[in-house]
Image (cartoon, rainbow over all chains, first blue to last red; front, side, top):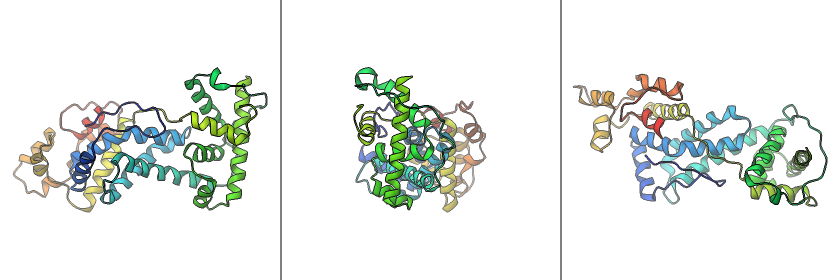
Length: 202
Length: 112
């Protein structure tokens, strides 16, 4: 089994396996070698779990179901894996699509504010926050602000700014107009900033 | 930063902060995923038989070994026998299941 180390970037960590190892593993899984299937799960479960969890937070109740769906889809599509890229990248691509499906379903629903905790706003932003806060503190602050947003605002921001989807792409995938997505993003950005500023002042 | 428009403000934060933090998947989840995959594989056609798996140099658990050496047909050795194993039940429901024997996929997942 391959050991899984720590990751620090947005992409699931790079797992050290050669293209040859990937191809052998895939071939063994397609032969229905149960040991190979166990290795497949052991290799990628931690990374996929971390990725999906970070994209759905703080709604963790769906994370395990989504990770399981990623694996089942990967198994169903495994015969299409051509070995042109790493198996890890291929599996991560499936996870991205699943997360996008989740975003799409949630953003199609009528916007609601029931899950946004209402807090006072205003106050000024620190002039140079990179100097004032360490990376870890900044991450915690980002999470605090994102967690306080309504689900639609949170997912829209993560999809647009962390997963780098364009407004047009989001519109196509949600069945909304690009204008509607832009309006949603504008409201989400304003709410994010308001909460961020409030956090700086308190 | 204070004077940046909202869009630039968020872009700066998103470029500097990655939301993902490494977190190990629960053992229960790994076990459930493995069980689900095995169930899907077994549904369509027989699994690779334990004899063939052993011939490929893979280690069998004590129960798989028993089935492999038993005087039964190859079709019985291609069944998903983990489905009736207590190790599966324990692994799917406990974060630290009391399962330790080597060659068991659920033990491997617990230790991964």
